[in-house]
Length: 346
Image 1: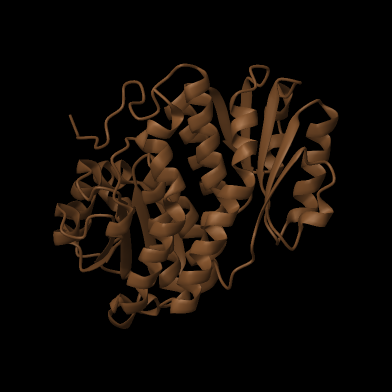
Image 2: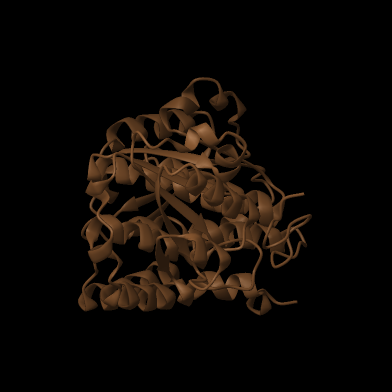
């Protein structure tokens, strides 16, 4: 089976067009007029698997930009420990994220939360007519991102755009057009990095580093490598990596760094240390920082876009890397071992 025939690859490469469609939809979406973040004393973001990592990214971003206390938890924690969902004393917005809208842990967590009268629920999903959506008080649907593959790729990044709209408001039609073009250029200009690294038999260990909200994205990229290619991969905060995990670095290691504008000086110091230990360095960065990353073996640049919309640019090449690694190892990335697209409670 040729690489072009896999649905997963087609969906990864389709992201720029789906982003354009989603941004156009969000332009006319009236949710921002009905939902006021400032009306809540607390925001709790939940999800399972990939969407748990999306909820980590979302909570940290929302905390900074809304000044409302935000937390992220796996859906099961709210289901099994209802007190973590809050109480009537503090009005909470539960942001429940699910690709299918049918994830049973998330649905039951929402039911548990609402039974306690702690606040309202916002569902973010690719299926706005799903069971989760019917339970929610507010829905942000991104149907353009629906996918056939088991491993989440375009669904993840499009749901990120839904979260960003809570902060940025409705995007402009101009942004939607420019965003799709920038995404296409990103993939066209950097896909060779994913191919070269994915097919390099010497590389055996993949470490994903991200600070603040990028830690959630680093964790998601790590999960893609595990799911698709069954490869050794871990995710850490940049500075935490020096507190023990760096002992695993050798010449068979790849460090994939999601560079942030706020703390890049400290992040580059970590990368310099890893380079000295023999690691190959891949830096994914806003293009206004690229001249200041001399230790990178591979530099993936993306445009600086107003607000937080551009965070989706961190992921496509990392998704493609996991895909290429899976194909190189003779695995089927469309059907990851032991996994199903929707997980049900036992």
